[in-house]
Image 1 (spheres, rainbow, N blue to C red):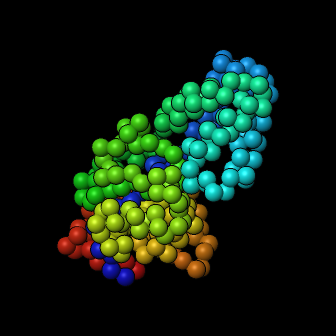
Image 2: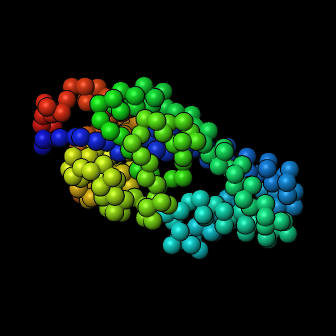
Length: 239
C-alpha cells in the first residue's frame, strides 16, 4: 500500500497528553470552587454525586454528545438549581473548570515530535473533546483545530474527518489521522477514506478484524522518524 501523506490530523486527549489526570483534577477544582462560592451545592453534590449528575445529564441529552462544554454547563446549572444555589454561578464555575481543563501535562515525546512533524507537513487537530489549543499554548503549531462542538458531530462520524480534509484542501486519501482510540480514531478515519495511524502507547494488541491501521507507533517520535524516512517525493509501500 503506497502512502502519500500530505497533511496530518491529530486527536488530542490521550494522544498528546493523558486525560485521566486532567479529569481527576477537574473534579477537585470544581468541588473546591463550589465549597467557596456555593457551599450548599458542594454539600449536596460532593465529587461522586457531581459525577453521577454529569452522567445523568449525558444520558438525558444524547443530541448534545458532541458538545461537552454545553453538557458541563447543564450539569453545573442543575447542581446549583437542585441545591438552592444561584444559577448565575454556573458560568464562573465553568470558567474555573475550563481554566483547569487547559492545564495539560504532555507526554514526554509530544512537543519535540509535533515540532518535527509540523515542519514537514501541515497538521490540524480533530477532537471530540473541548480542549482549546490556544489556551493550552499549542495553536501556533497547528493549521487549525476542528472540534466536535464546532462541527456539530463527533468522531467516528465521517463528516468531521471530511470537513478537516476540506479545510486542508486535500483528498482524504492524502491525510493521515493519528489517535489512540481504535474506533473513534482508526476506524473512523478509515471509514471516512483517510489514512490512519494508531498511537499505541500501552503496547496493546490490535483486536479488530474489520479494520486495520495503516501505521502503528508507540509514540510520536516514531511517527516523526517515519516521516523523515519517507519524504513526499519518496514515500514507499508499507508491508
